Length: 342
Image 1 (tube, one colour):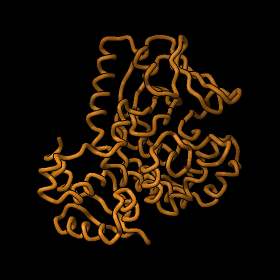
Image 2 (tube, rainbow, N blue to C red; image 1 turned 120 degrees about the horizontal axis):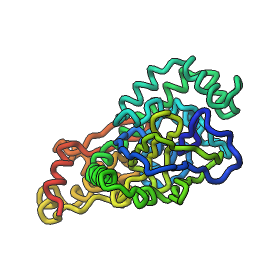
Image 3 (tube, rainbow, N blue to C red; image 1 turned 90 degrees about the horizontal axis):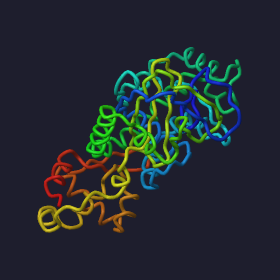
Image 4 (cartoon, rainbow, N blue to C red; image 1 turned 90 degrees about the vertical axis):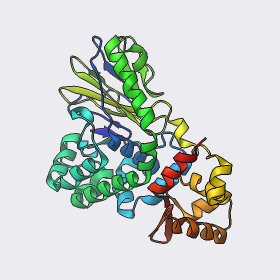
């Protein structure tokens, strides 16, 4: 079962009170690492669409919220219920324990999940035939919920995949950091710096949330999964008999929320013009024309003119979604920016 940005196990110790939960470490844990962008998509979906703010910058929250379709917003409503924290394991059909899990694989697993399996998951999570009120609409139309939730994850990924690619150096550095710790021992410093919502103490790891409970790592492997998400994001998987996994914000992610490093102004401006150079830099993620006009502080008519020129040069794409026109950089534009970065 899950609660908001944290996934908790079916069959865990009966909760005591809301507050802090603890994962007890009886010995030096065996560490592993997994790069699973699907958990990044889940954390961003919870933050931007369900409204459980975990530190995602407002620009990205608006971009993601605008990109997710109506059926996706409907599917995420159970996660936004005030004072309600538990949810089914179907939120994460593939855990990162068996290896890296891509977003397309996660979406495919959701679309392949049968409505009966989802209903059984709800029953197993809440240990009752009648799910809580926030899940009743999903239980009445499980196929619709699965379709909407899978689509929401796909929409999030379509928005943030370019940012994920830029995060690769940070993820590679984190893989190296965990690897060095595993070889040299002494994971205390590493576990104590996984995020602001995790505290490493003598007995193990403590994390805030409701319901509270105590869980034993035992001889299981501890799988660390860095995410590109808000600074307070946290996703846990505690019920697998072979491993426990913790998804946490990758260190240094704050640098990615800012605009990209400015290109060498003279060179790029000479090639495409100063306004279009700034416009390409602003498109670090897909944006609507209205969002881009506000960010650039340029009149819509002028923005349309410059976008027409960039589109003619195959540096941007335009896609109409309902009443909004979305603008995105092309691979050719990304290569151009890399060439001229200071």
